[in-house]
Length: 274
Image (cartoon, rainbow, N blue to C red; front, side):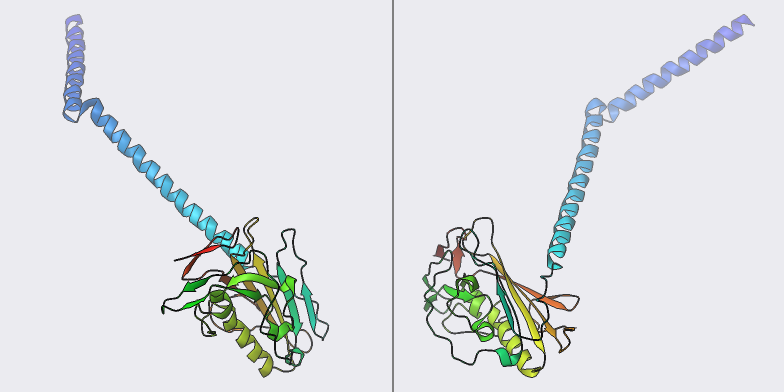
């Protein structure tokens, strides 16, 4: 009986040792430690790639959410008083215009023709006669009204003027104007003027906000905001097309202060031909 138990134990040990040997050979055949290292490395690399992809998606999502949050910011309307109102923020510590806001009816628009020449130089003012895509030369920048003269009646008012490209202001880099370009202010200004003409008993609440990066003297974008008001001050949505976004009844448009034929240094206002 003791001999049988002893033989059984030997068999168990033999089977165990054989299993170890077989496992060892299989281990060598599959690449040994290098193979395991490669497999682990591949695994962790795949995880790292996944994490990077997730981070990228999250960053993109966060950026989109921030942008959406920015787009839903609405300037407070001027209090409805059933009369024309105009408010302008004072120049900031760098002498920059930052905001103009008006509320008016069509009958409040100026009837006198605007003086063609402006004398005030807004912050960052420089100008360049650059070649356009047609081969002709045209001025890069305009002394640009925030609330246009056709609404405000203001011409050489410092708080209402910024340095902006002709492309942003008039919709074209060429001489003249193009109110068919939704990347230019004129597209919206002329259509808002038409809206006032077609709704003589209603008011337009219209604001233009300026955006600068830190201490730059020239803005990188302008944001237009507008909404109609009936005779009781009730908001009326205005849709003009173009680059509009809508927040409740209020319409917003953000325009970039750029030009297809120029590279602009917003810190100083200098520019070079593209």
